Image 1 (cartoon, rainbow, N blue to C red):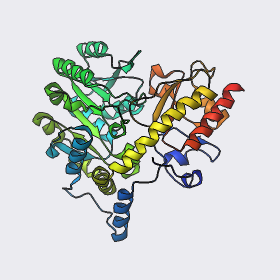
Image 2 (cartoon, one colour):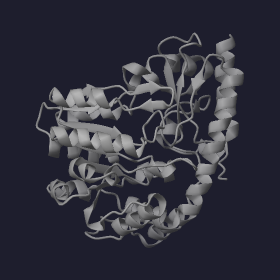
Image 3 (spheres, rainbow, N blue to C red):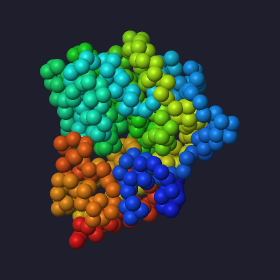
Length: 381
């Protein structure tokens, strides 16, 4: 099981998570984790620094082959390395794909509550979003396939899929994804699937790549992935787009070459190390996240009466219903101001987020415990 770095070392970091607030705040918001780098990644980056290998990304690397091997090993997904193209980060890939498959002003379906950039990307892609919220069912959060079908019938031309879903942690099942692909194909719509949290699917849970669900998905789909969430590499700037049909591969090839040039060389190096040598570290991380999930359930039950949290299938982000705690529509603001804990406001994930917060539990049990106890004191005040 992987251990997080001590708090005093974490406070020496200069990234968003640790530089946004003062030292009296425990940051459990932005999707960075608090663990040491995987040893293979540290090794390749240290060697690159030693020899000054800090230039541009070369025209060809073994990154596509590394990912292909990882995808087959971890998910049984067969990917053509010739249909893997790198870019700077997942949201750049999403924006460029939307530009490639839509015309200005056309509508794109999003499924709230969802990652906030899914709303903001449309300014960049010159599209408009249509929200078809997830359905809350006894079996968990589900895509509203009927609502999506209707949105396509009313003119939407694409859908932004989050799989596994952020913030609920839902890994959409194969049957749901296949039906989504069928619906999209029947309307001639595209599906752009953000699968960045896929490597963090919990032990005993299944991740199904959208493109693996059949010919309809191959026809309509584009997937965008990265090692950055699982291995905490966001600052190194590397993601990749995957296609499963020749037609869609050609669409990706027509995206301006500058999009690929913006990939970071250190991101390529770190991604290769992660995909080729990172399994042991990743499995230790997943063990820690399972433990932290259960700890969070227990802490909320003990210290935050009224909070409702159902652990997801993947990731290190908890979607917590705080509506019965008395902290109002935006509990994150009160929690930051009075408990000195930074969590994400549910409102930023769309209308269904009123009264919710997102907690990042990719940290140590000690930090997580301190944070939830602080919130508990606020509730009891």
